[in-house]
Image (cartoon, rainbow, N blue to C red):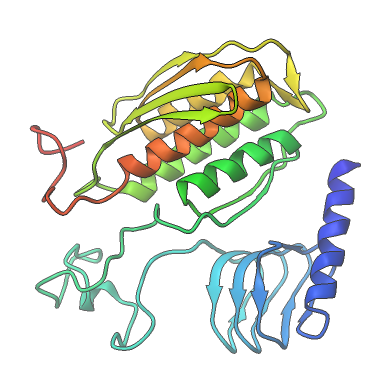
Length: 294
């Protein structure tokens, strides 16, 4: 019932905001921070989060996240996530053969890297999240905002059983997404750490993007749940993330009494430490390892 109400509220908000620019049925799902120029349409059972130029539309049962240009037609059952490639002057094509030295298709006309294409981790903190667990949504929004990661996440889990599978699976997928986003780890700092306060709670988080998964977790909670989120799942979530991403992750509660503050402090500390670990350092020419690989 809660999810139905949330979808209805979102539908009404977007209808009011873009009543003269966008047509879409209630079965379509649209990120609340999306933007439309006009003469746009999204058909049934499609998902869209991003910006759409004038005269563009998306056919049924598609999943599109990112920027859609003007007068673009997207067929049904198309899935597309945002990537990094040039599409404005002075570049005449999105083909990496003309701007990249990575030779994605085995060839390159460019002698030097003309466009920074491996920067998927860097964002502005925009998030569109719906897991069906309100407190978990709040934590993931905090993670995205404070780490400046752009995150779109739509989950349909077996919440009629409990929240375990939903939270654990999100952790696995998020970890794998982080691993894919940082790629070969060239020129990134690799390490990140912070001691973060959240009211009476104080949380330490340290990360090593070593490729070797390991979690050390030290947290004490006084209640079984915060909202519909089982506090036992905090450790399970970070365990799943650490193994999905191949990271060494330490999270330690130094102080704290309120479970909401403690958990929120953990998610924010994780975000800030990960942001630091994925930052580029111009002094690092390859990977930060004596072995030459991570």
